[in-house]
Image (cartoon, rainbow, N blue to C red; front, side):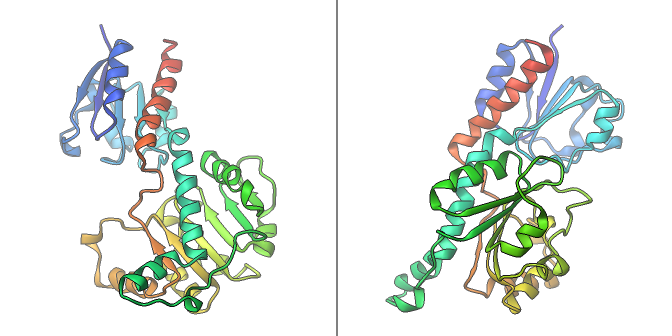
Length: 302
């Protein structure tokens, strides 16, 4: 009997087609509400971020694998899965190039003041001196998290004649975190959200940098304390900021305090925001699926 796989989020059509070609019975329900998901009749589950999968949701599920069409696994209780023979696949390889390119775009935009210059020209303001920028050449970039995303960023920035310092507590990297505090002009974050990394970027962390830095976060919003970021901007510890992610990305649910804090940060012209799209390209859409298919094939030795 064919193993059944449930897809509960929008994914590239090639994933369902490839799964069927491998002999799986595929049930596509991208519009399903999380409370209506019944996992006890499926051996595989494909999702992006629709639901949290903890011990309660996974108990007696019958799942053999969970495939996350993306990078982060913070919504899945991986320890429970490991203890209960449920394999968990992510697709970090699929969007690493997209994330790296997005970070480079953000960095160049801030360095050359492209966002503010564009807004001014559209308003009929032609201010060359006010938009004098700075060059990446000769600057030091600190990367925290040296997995797929961090390594891709370092590789793509080699042609900019920058000094790259990478730190990763759990993987071989090139420098100690103290080196980054000492030398970095720019800091790019590429860590998963865990109990250890939640609000890792706080006021105490930022105060350890010897120079004002540009902070770029394309990992998870909760890695950064927005209060610390606001303080860093007000004290010029942060000379620039690019956030692709926020602690609460459901903007309609913001409290007055959350809204006021964001507006305080956004008032600085050296800030740049995007709606969690660093890994969101036409190419990564199918690259993610290809990465998952290869891992599922290897798991079942197909």
